[in-house]
Image (cartoon, rainbow, N blue to C red; front, side, top):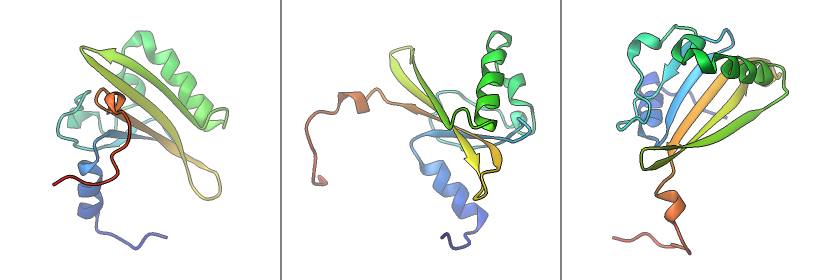
Length: 129
């Protein structure tokens, strides 16, 4: 259960995450993206309200449409892929967002630079100061 929080607190929480988040609603319109400081894929404010298909190269729109269709129809609950971008490894995940009754509300895209995470070895059980 979540206690009601002011919008500015929720926005600050999402902006402090080390991932990029974008939300596309059930009508395929971009409704939100966080303002993570060092974005891998910069987003201009002008994309808010636009169809997500208009934010991708024409050659990949058929894949975007298929993914959204599969999320909406419960053929997929998430999808993931990773790419090499310059000297970084970028992990991109898409999650269906549903209400408690299972109704599709939209798609959450989460993008993260995992280059340094892939270098982790062993354990670190205590915080260093």
